[in-house]
Image (cartoon, rainbow, N blue to C red; front, side, top):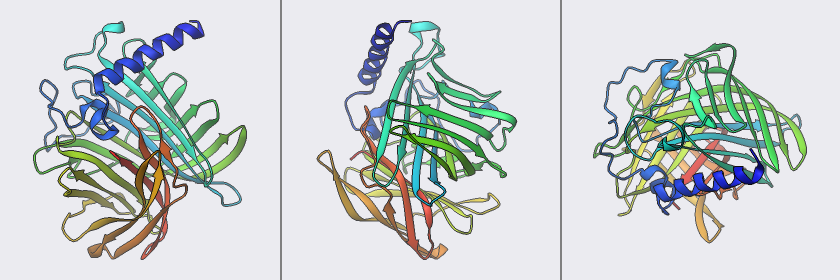
Length: 361
């Protein structure tokens, strides 16, 4: 296929996605996260998760993603971050059809971040054409040449080992992800509430990856190692109509404990807090909303927006009180549905590294 044909096809696919999703912010615009889910499958408590089947797509639900973030460093201790995400969105309910009548749209985001540089890229594809998709066994998620695939001795209970690849004009990432512990179910045994009105998702993670490989920024290769985290989530209506966005943290604590914590913001100024505390052996306990807090402490102006890029996180019952700071406060994903995503460090009662995602600003 010629380059001009490919560009025209991509422009059509991207335009179709933008038309389907509307011109709102990422949080409510992408896949109509807060719109009625009539005709799509519902998220209900008590789902039995099955692997490798649940590593694959769930086309009866409107939206899902395969989301990897990595906190990395080079031999000299310089810090970097990497992101690789594949999103699937169904434009309408019903089983997927073939070719251009397929209603599944795919969107890929990738980024690398250093203290002074943030590079990102975005790509779209239509389902039914073989240009993007996910296969549960053997595991493979891809969009064009970007790929996340299982390697020899792949264990579906750990979703490891994996190879991650992404490239754009000014950066590339190649990582191997290994994990010795099993996947972790978030929320209440994988049922993740988003409001007190029934919005929810199915959500599990692999927060124990050890990463190694190479990133290239502006033709300069760097060998890196570090910690990585994968989130798998799917739903048909994960937000309520009056929720405007979220602030999501994944923290690697020095004891090898992990914390996933986020707040969902509402138009009236109220917020809902959710999260899970994960022990080194992989046991996961929900975080209570009462008595815990995520509070912004400093902002950064990007593209006319003021974004809270430094935070205070307090979980008194866990003895945690930390201040977070971004590796690069300008880690803005200026994609079709823009958001902030980048590596952070934290100090206080605990010290460590993590990732922060903020949508709807």
